[in-house]
Length: 81
Image (cartoon, rainbow, N blue to C red; front, top):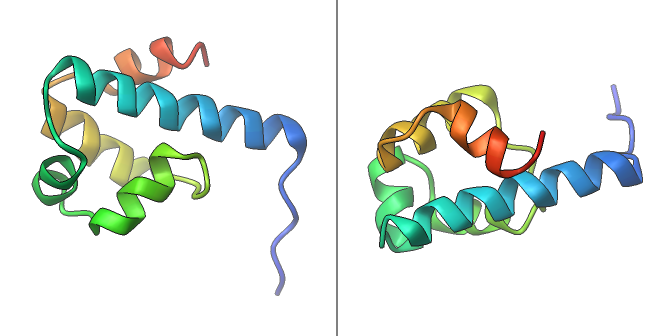
């Protein structure tokens, strides 16, 4: 079973979500490495999420939000999603 290619709109949304995660992380003065460690996500995968190259799962988004001390809705709001 092959996956369906992402649309331009989906790519835009992933990039917005990744940028929002990065922005919230920087506001909280947390390094990408520390965020990845605290969220239980590989550092290189965290970088790909922030660049919008990977589709972050709901569970990973919950882990990231918890590690940043924010609600997931704050990340979605910052991404304007």
